[in-house]
Structures are given as C-alpha cells and as structure tokens.
Image (cartoon, rainbow, N blue to C red; front, top):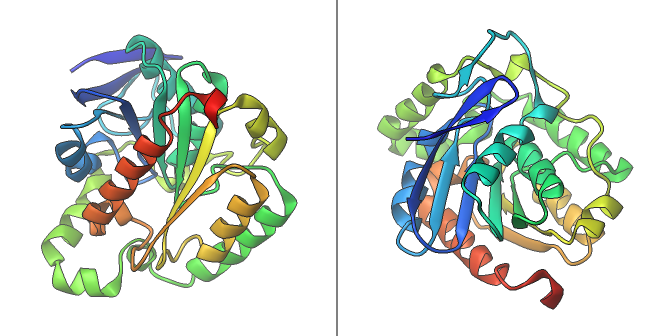
Length: 263
C-alpha cells in the first residue's frame, strides 16, 4: 500500500472500492485498521480511503517524537488528498480526527466537498460551544476510559470485540497524553461558512464524551450544516454499531455529493 509525504512523515494509507470518495480519519486510539467494518461495507458504492496520522499505525516518522501537535495532523490528510488527486471528497473524522478533517477541508476546499464531524466539534472556536464541551468533558472524566467509548451492555455481550478494541491502540506510538493543541486556535464559524465546504455533525445518543445537546447547539449555530443523531449509539459508534454508522455515512455521502453552488 502507498505512502504520502507530509512534513517529516511517510503517511500510510489505503484505498478501497470505487465511486465518490469517503476519507476516514481516526481518533486518538485508532489507525487505518479500525475501519474494517466500514471499508468492507462501503467499498461497493464508494471509494474508501483510510490513513494513519503521524504517530499512529504504520505511518513512519523521520525523527522520533514524544509530542504531537494536533493542529498539524491535517497536513497528513492533505498529503493523501493531493497524492490521490481526490475531488469532492467527504472527510469523516472520528473524535479528535475531526479536528484534522475540518482543517484539511478548509485548506483544500477544491478537493473536499464536505466534512463529517464525528462525535466532535472539530475544534470550532466559539465561546458558547467551548463552555458546553467543557461541561461534557467534566462529566466524562468521571467514567473509566472504556465506559466513555463503549456502552456497558456491549462490553458485557461482546467481550471479544471489546478486547480487540482495547488492543487497537497498542499499535500506536502516540497516546492521548502526547497530543497537544487539541482545542486551540480552531476555525471560527465565519471561516467555515466562507469555505463553501459543507459540514455535518454525526453523534450517538449515548455518547458519554460529547452530549447530544452540545452537538445540536453547534448545528444550530452553523447554519446550513447537517445533523445526524443515531439512537442508542456510543462515542465509538463506528465500532459498536457499525451498521447504523455505515448507513449514516452513506446517507451523508449521497446527500452532500451535489455541487457546492447547489447548496
């Protein structure tokens, strides 16, 4: 599989299927392989691109690092977009991957038609949203990490997939504690509107990290955005409820595929 060069990193990525492009950007415990349930299901209708951000999976760093600037992750996404010469791509971020996805969309609006902010506000700079997200985090940290990401019922009924979920993060050099600038100098609502890139918020009803209330308010503030709330789904919806997640992505890809001028 190919690599794309990005500021001292050889970014590993994979391309599957054919059709309108969906680029999947993982979160802090992930890498390209977490999308196994998405690539297999969506590649019959869409081009599915998965990648490893710097410090994750099989991406190779020219110089070892102990800290990773989250504001620079979008360069990895842009490198893949450019190398594959993608146009009208839909970038899908998972959790902190949404920060990279949104920044990449704003940097390459000619290649990106839409960005799906999965379980995240994508680092959007807005005082009310910052306050709401901080309140959500204050509640989330009261829970064990695994309980923030997967429901208790799923953990009890699928210990095999819960075990595999935990193992996925062990392939990464970077950890959540190594990431910097997650919530600093994000784009404002006016910048997003001016880009012409469509934005969709995708969240789970049972997300213990970011509440439905917060996501809904972000949607209200960003006029023209789309909102998908999946009933019963947790923060790691892509893993626990893949059929609902995949269906939501397919709907959004079909909905957001029209030319920007028609929005």
